[in-house]
Every structure is written in C-alpha cells, then in structure tokens.
Image (cartoon, rainbow, N blue to C red; front, side, top):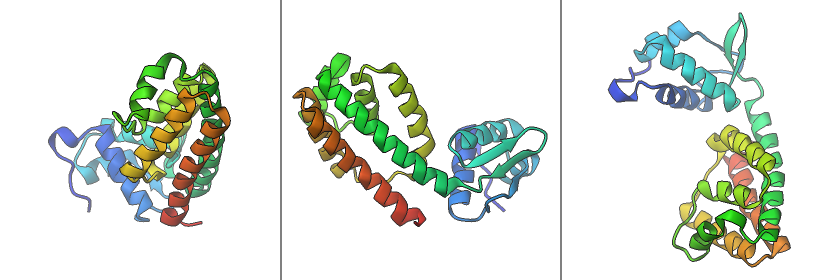
Length: 200
C-alpha cells in the first residue's frame, strides 16, 4: 500500500507525481484502470486531488480518460513520447531560426542575460526562444508539447546552461542557421536521454 500523502502535499500535483512515478516504475501497467475512490483511499486523500491528478496526467499522455468508463494507464505512452520529442525538436529549431531573424525580438534583453551567463535559462529558456520567434501560434504549440514531454527530459544543468548560452548568442547575432543547428544539437540530448532511460 502506498504511503498516505499528508498535509500540504495532498494536492493534485502531489498525487500526479506519485502516480507518474508508479507508471514509470512499472507498478501500474499499460491499460490498467485507475479508479478515483481506490486511489484516494490508497493515498489518504479526497477524490478532488485525485481527479485533478488524473486530468494532469491525461494532458501529459500518461492516462487515457474515456467518458463513462473512467481512466486507464496509457498503452502508448513511450511511443507517443518519442514521437512528441521529434515534433518538439522540429518546432524548437524553427523557433530558434525565427528568433535569430528577429535578433531576440521583445525578449532580447532576457536572452542577453543568458548569453552573458547571468542566467542559465532553465526550462524557461525555451519559452524565451518561442516568444522571440514572434509567432504566437508556434509559442502555444510548443507550450503544449513541452508540458506533455517534460516528464521524459533529463538535464545536466551545466551542459544545458552552456547550450542555452550558445543558442542565445547565435540568436542575438542574427545567425539563423547557427541558432537552428545549435538548438538541434541541444534537443538531441533530450531524445538520447529518453531512449537510454525508457528504452528504444
């Protein structure tokens, strides 16, 4: 039986983290039903955070929810994850090219801080590049994709900071081809990590 989630940690986010970990560890199998009442009892919480957690996991691709049938563990999680990372890389490369053509656009100052090593950027760096692209539809698409694949990404903060700095410099210099290439190299690390961590 799972340990109860107590106090301030009894939110939908906490339940989502716990269920996500169980799915990735193989303790919850593909196709297995996820019954709200059972999960609530298991973690010592009400059904409300469980419902929030299942909705979150559905948005990330971990769970499939069918009306009148309830939730089950996704049967295509890893396959979908690999495909989404490929799509994400293509869109991120495009965003980097547009951002370079705009020389950072409205977020040039923030990108300059990354370029100067004043900020590593973290996951927010990719949001900056999307904003710098000047394409709101592209930004929205990337936000949705990044939410769905975030669980499968592995980062060495130092390597990521170095990569982000190089991409930011290329963008601010207006070097569209270089920015695209560097973003491609950076995101291939995520795909290699995914394959090594979760299997081919």
